[in-house]
Length: 350
Image 1: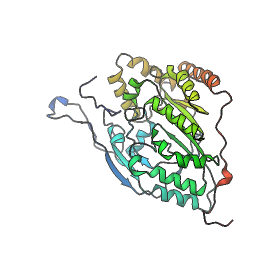
Image 2: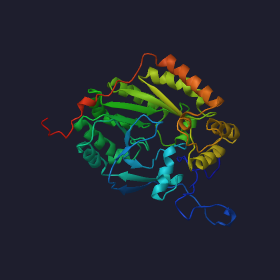
Image 3: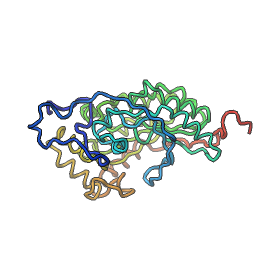
Image 4: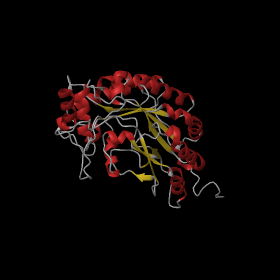
């Protein structure tokens, strides 16, 4: 590995931001007296948005609404599709995404305003959908917990997806919601290979710790599933049966998957990472990812962009379906009970 490799970070570059006129280059590195880039420390920025609940129109996703208390994510997952959204803030989708974290400090107030809207009807709201609502900064700011308290007060359905065991801190609120079938939790497990996880998802909980999180949530009566995503051919596709078996044995009621999609700036960031960490199989992995998307890494075609197509995609889906049938037969998440919603707030008499 390069001696200048930034340990503890996923991205190793500051990718170009298409919205900015100036950007970092290394065309003449021999002329620099000091390194152009250094491993950044985490910086926190605060935002007071006007709304927190967003409608999701993509036909690829089952959720209709999402809310993201943070922008950017310290987890540093190299493949993260959300990296591109950081460019709208004037930052890089690379190192900036995982080191410049935007905190939406009024998220719980905005959520309550949304639920009090007379035109709002109970529809599950997903936390997060873009960046992880239990990333490291949540331990300090507790914005996700505050939002969950709003959900509890109004008996509103919520879904959560995370790869951080910090979610166990809020097991009291989640168990309360679970009593009325108002919560679904998904734990993202991409790999159980610690050597791969440490470089692909550098600031996340280990795979074993995530399985234990699934187990603890299940024991508390909270419906929990696992997202085995993204599947990256040549890196983690062979782990599908192992992950699904372990997830089921630890109490997961459902499982989902997507294939990797290198949209926007993520392609350049991932390619740089892949060359530095897996030079011996770079060509194989890169070509197989490309084949999933008809040769177009920045795939925007609904349906194909999340599931892929072609021979490699077919092999992945066959392995996934066979494993799900074997380990999840007879299991399913309970339906949300939308009738529990306290429309108009706690003080409403009717």
